[in-house]
Length: 239
Image 1 (tube, rainbow, N blue to C red):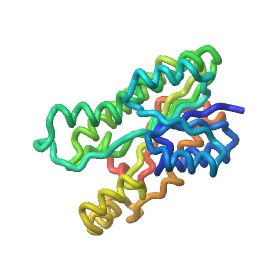
Image 2: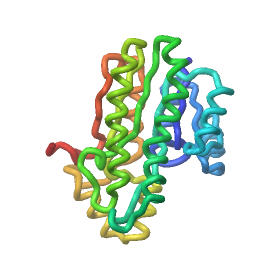
Image 3: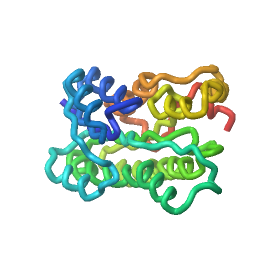
C-alpha cells in the first residue's frame, strides 16, 4: 500500500484530499495544527493525524527523522490574504511566504530522499489561480503561490530521473473554511463576486479539487510532471 502525506489536512481541500486518497487505497498521514478537526477526521477515515506546525521547520525535520518514507506528498497547507499591498509590511510578507511557500520546501525536502531511493514518488503542490492571474488584495499570497509553480517545475526537472513526478493544482474560489471566513467578514456580495470570476458562475467544492489531486497522486499519472492544472471553473482559461 502506498503511503501518502497531506499537509494542512484537517479542513477544506486538505480534508477532502485525505478522504479521497484513503478511498483510493492509500495509507494516509496528515498534519495540521487543528487538533479537534484532525482527530475527528482521522477517526472518520482511518488515517493518521499528526499535530504539527508546518512552519516550525525544526519540528518538520524531526517528524521526518521519526517517520518511514512516503510515496506521495500533497503540499496543501496555506493561508489567504485580504489586504492591499500598501497595507502590509515585512512581518506580513514573512508570514505569507513561510506558510504558502517555504512549508512546501520543508516537506518536499523531507520526502525526497525516500522517494529517490525507492525510484518512485508523487508530489502535488496546491497553488492557486492567484499565482498566475494575480490577486487584488492578495499580492503577497499571489507571489507565494506563483513561487510554488516555479518550485513545482524545478522539482519535476530535478527528480524525473528518479521516477518522481511533481505537479501543481490551481484552485479558484472554493467553498473552504478560508473562503467562508472571508465571506463572513465582507458579506454575501463577496461570494457572488467570487462565483462571477468563474465561467461556471459558482464556487467549487473541496471534493472537486481533491479528485484532481488524487489523480495526480496515482500511478496512472506517471507520464504527467511539471504541469499546472487549474481546478477553477474556467477562471484561468483566458491566458
